[in-house]
Image (tube, rainbow, N blue to C red; front, top):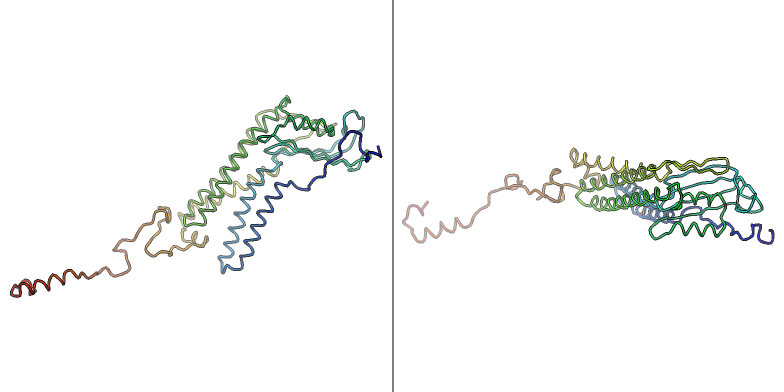
Length: 343
């Protein structure tokens, strides 16, 4: 066994793992780069506008990053247990390990970490992913895992999510993942439209799109909760212990972000009705940009400008007409004795 690198014959060793999901790491890096860019240009903004501008940027970037991150996260439903269990097939060896299960919108992630990590003359640290996204075949990935000879706890949990498993977890979580992901993509689109409208003099519609962003996130949570509760929980026995799952960080982050968007959207709608001038000041927009236009909150800002009437114009309304003087001069030349022309 020592000549084979302290591993069981015919079994592949554990793969090196990145400490964080690469997709989530990429999303976080992109939004952090955008935030750093905005912070660099922050000193060029003067007065209270700087604080308002920073608050808007940080809030908007947080909402967008949260929507994208939870869409690719594998922690919508999580569970972990510490137990003594068999290690691999055709072996009577038992190990003490922490076993984790993370269920996402596109698949499951199973971790197996020995306590301690070094047992049976090898390193017990596995992190395996099985996906059911469009274009992926979960059954084929499970068959490859059998061929690789992964540890028994990993194969046991992965088998519970196969299409032929009597637990029905595959259909349950796959359906929930598809509908939840669709709602989150719609929410992300609404977030993009909200940012575009909030940078224009149509703040109320930007608030409506922000409200729609929160509503679609809450709908995503509703679809996930309903789909995952259609069937009774499937017991997951690992040694003498049972692994129980519960809502993970991605679920609660989506709930928090959705409620935040709903509250911000409602606040903007109320401010647009009650204090439109303060709302425009917060977004660094002035109502005095064009003196010939008067904006009405009920009419949608610049989308339907209402022009001032002649009576409301600040200037003088007396406009001399040259045509009257020309007619009087012609009358005097043509009819000098006419009393009407003399007037």
